[in-house]
Amino acid sequence: MKWILIILAVPAVLFVVALTHYTLPGRDIVRLVGTDVKRMDVGQSSWFWASPDAGTNQTWTRDVRFINAVWPDGSPRVYRNEDTNWNWPPYFKFDSGNITAEAQALAQQKDQWVAVTHYGWRIELFSIFPNVVKIKRLKGPDTLLIPWFNILFFCVLGFVLTMIYLMVKRFKERNIDPVLEDIDEMTDNISDNMSEHADAARDKVVAARSGFQAFMKRWFGEAKK
Image (cartoon, rainbow, N blue to C red; front, side):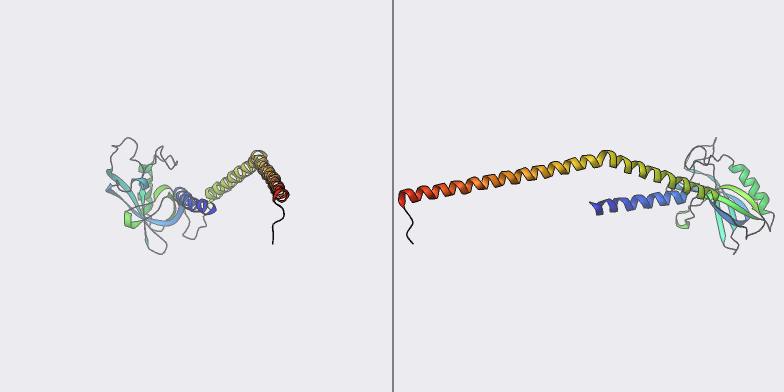
């Protein structure tokens, strides 16, 4: 039973970790180099794409805004820029057009480094891109970014899980453990009663056999050796 629970728990934990890693915001220090609009068919990987912008045609093939950037070492970094609307994840983003305009202005400033807040993954094989949430100017590529939101999220999550664990533990101690103890006591009593009945039955068998042997001796005498 223990191994079955472990086998079932491992995929569940991996799913929760992956979902959390995908959904929580991340921040990249990059330099913007331009923007682009591409017509994309997102039907095969729609889970990794936001819904179409508010007020647009709800189709799987649509124009998607992209923001191009480079890391401090010069390697490329590409983001998509889509509204999340009221859907998951709950960033309530409706200003993708404004972010594109901001990115175009920042791309003209060659030495301007920015912090791009985003969620999602970049998987080139499946044409999956992280989605930009916010762009913030920085003084340079060495700026220290502290993920305060993620720290607060995990602190709150840890507190909630601890409270749930304590509640379940107290419920078990107050309601389940006494029942299990009663069942164990009942089982022990049944075992003791069965042992007593077995001993009584054995004594009756011994007495009956002794009586039968005495009867045989009385009528037929001792068996000759």
